[in-house]
Image (cartoon, rainbow, N blue to C red; front, side):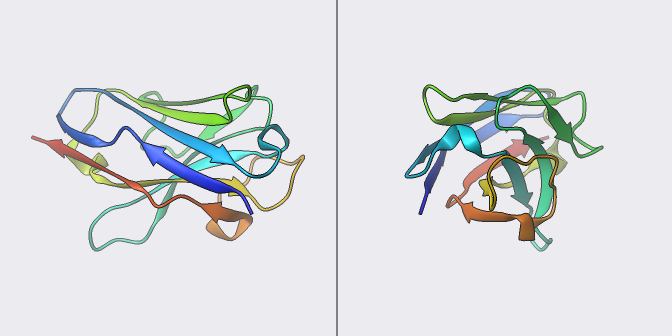
Length: 126
């Protein structure tokens, strides 16, 4: 079973930037697509973006497109979420997740991801 650990969350002013990291261990990291989700207070967890196993293809939710960028370093077993031009509505706990199955990509529903980190809090002040 893969272990995922997020880091990099914190408090930032609106318009600022943060970079989240998610370190993976256990399975062959480079065989699996990875994704970021977030959950704001009182809301359902929602999809943020995903990256294929090679890092050559990404897909984002509409409300973060153009502001957030997902990348990965397979040599370090780490996936990143660069968040720019942050807004108060980006405040949430951010989770990384690994696809249930290797060698596929483009999934965006929670059910498609079988391993999750504990989450890291991102708070954007106005």
